[in-house]
Length: 408
Image (cartoon, rainbow, N blue to C red; front, side, top):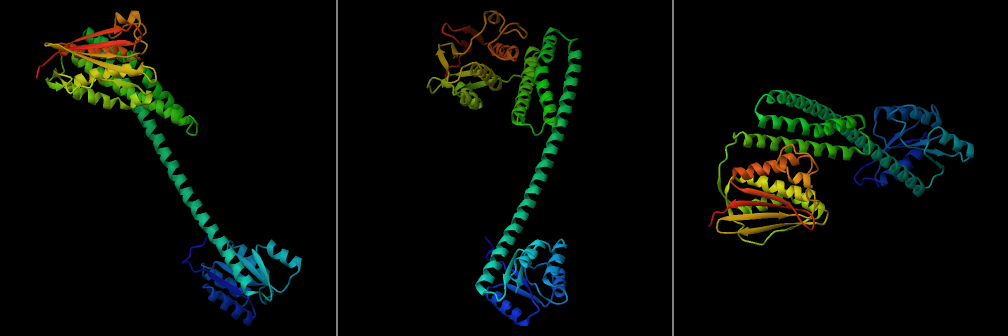
């Protein structure tokens, strides 16, 4: 479909003045811009001076330079070779017609020509040229976009390399920190063992899949690799934060400011943070519909981490379409928050060492178990609270947190 407001420019070439007048009249009436030449040489001069002709009507039998030679000359020049040529010829022999097509003409009209036929063919070839030009523009645009995307991928690749180097440097720094911390007290030695034990897996995942990504950018598994990279990075970030918090709690270097905290607010915040995980496994949270879950005197950030760690582990080890329940029991002096899941529970061996940083055996959580429950225990100790963990007879596990209640 041609652009309605575009005025196309046509060059009519014929040594017969009457033919030129007739052609010019028809084309101008059809709203075309028309140029004229009396022979091939004049036509070439006009075409070379003005690079805006959209089509050439070219008489075959002309003095000085005939139509066939003119068409050949046009096809030898880069900016003229794509202009459509329609021959005007009194010769209707098959050899003459084939010769015209062989040297690059798009069509021919025999004399005497019919006005409707001429205008119809002109319109058809102008539409073809217009669409072809538009397609070229689209191809150029697409090539530019591909080049931009290629450059963006190269930049992303470079950034991944830089991040890998930074992570490798961070790893070396942590190893150096391990050697230094090994000279401190037993608590710091335990923390060093956490770093040595835990940091290798996420870092190996990041470094290994980053290298594959660099080598295999066009791999169909690219998306899965990037997701693995993201998961490993998030795990490393979580490990770093938890490790630092454990160290501060164990060495009493964390400044804890206590305040009166409505537990409703804690529960709502944790539910919001874990919403995606709950949705991914379609897990139902069965929490009591209460206006008041109680008020605890403590540090809101630490207690939120405490609640989140318990629920996070319950979600990880609950089956799809499962459920997790929260029971609340209040007395005059204390309040219990009991989290119940229906997952795999704890092994008998791990139940005896749940709060030890480096206990052996299979656990209810992933590789961060030695951090998560140890951290929960430290937070409860800081708040003079208690944590109890047990397996359910029907499967799954129960974690109960007990706090001194502030009555309001």
